[in-house]
Length: 238
Image (cartoon, rainbow, N blue to C red; front, side):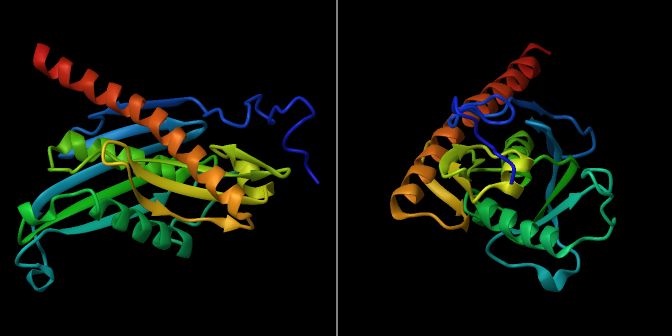
């Protein structure tokens, strides 16, 4: 059994229990999309693109009083250690649904009746926590597109390894640990839009893990906010 935390309280990558992996966000990376973003969260490398609002095809899918959101989460065949089949897996279909529901909570869909918003996520490299990093990337892409939002939304996971609650699990911690808890959070509204967990947590551990995930989300929000501000000021200068 792999020991994930040493006697000094350090994890395999040298982080303490409450430290995030490095996070880098770029906005406006795809020319032909209405909004786009690229995120590096640890070794995760993910691109998100937003197209729309635009006309619905086929017509029978449209909803008269609000927009439809479609989301496609896809992991490239070369994104994992073992080559992944190019066709969508059950996990990708499930995460696509989870991401769509998390996004619907943050959008003013009633402002775009009879239209559709398409969100695409491509995972170029995966290293644990890709769904949380994808949420942050989608949020940046939606903000870049100019679609009305109630708040930005960010994602971060906490979990349990060697009996300790830790923040922002890497791939090996996700696989070898005792539990994980992905959380999506709207910082300004102080609302959770996604909460999942896998493993066994006591009531005290659950509360500690949730508080830790929210703290991590607030730190990621500052990185996201800075990336959007930099894009805005560059646009203003032009």
